[in-house]
Amino acid sequence: MIIKSKQVLAAAGLATLVPAIALAMGSRPKAADEEAANLRIQPVAKLRLAAPSAAGSAVGNRTGEELYNAVCTACHAQGVAGAPLFGNAAAWAPRIATGLEALLQTVKTGKNAMPPKGGSNATEEELTRAIVYMANHSGGKFAEPAAPAVEEKKAP
Image (cartoon, rainbow, N blue to C red):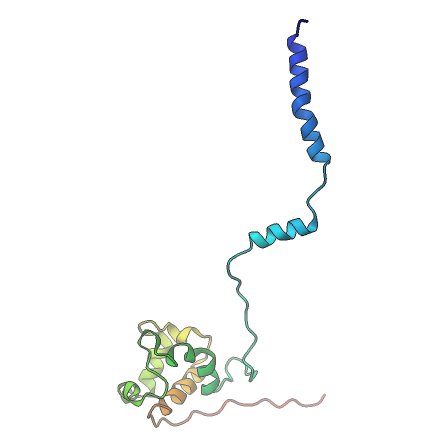
């Protein structure tokens, strides 16, 4: 039997075309398979923006204690990167001696590992309240800034 080149080409074409058609017509991945693939390729971490603090204070109206608990405690509760510990009068004494304005300027611009505003979105008034809160619990005697105004909701 003599095999002609046209027959070889046709046989080769069918040999590749038939499996390709069978795969194309085959079953699609199930939803569970797609979900499993999505789980395998998901990011290692996710970012979730937190709601305002439990006290529900809006930016600009937080007390010194609220801002401390929300932001400052991350470093000042443990002395991270040389941050003076909350309540440690010896560590705070030289800082308190510079005065409230100097402390506020340092917090606004950042120092060493502390980013500007401690990495927060706090207003200058909130920063002042937080500084007074921390300093006064560490041997300072700064005057307490005015408390944030509480809005009263009126019935329509």
